[in-house]
Length: 144
Ligand code: 4NP
Image (cartoon, rainbow, N blue to C red; front, side, top):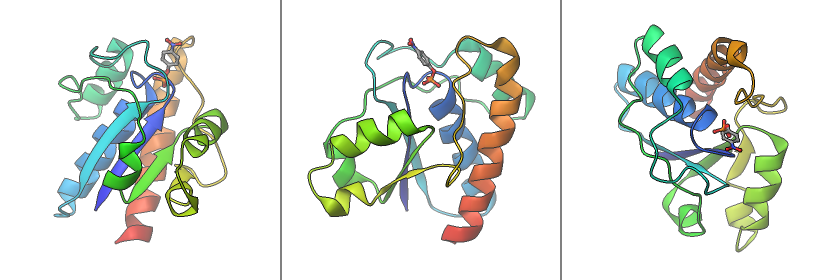
């Protein structure tokens, strides 16, 4: 199974989603490949935001070696599922889908709720970690 996590900048939320999902999948002995990308390109080549690195480390997950990249059309072919954090990501990614099958791969990570952008709110990193972890655990139980 190949899963892509997408947010706006690929430095706060989707790196956490990649790290948490890979951690949970590995723990379950699942041979899943998880990656992440951003709809925007401002931070390409950078490592994740230090606040995401820190909150992940506090929960025993190392995301410090991830490198930011931008979402692109080839991702629709490569991945089985594309999970986005909020409705802006959903419309941005679906607008790039070449056909209905590609568009159907794109879903909100939390189903109907959104993962809020913590970029301007330091105190949001822990709640965002918890929301993403909840979503990833639900997904594993649904997809296995
Ligand atoms: P993310 O947060 O989408 O969770 O990675 C953001 C990071 C950077 C920016 C916006 C959101 N930015 O505008 O630079």
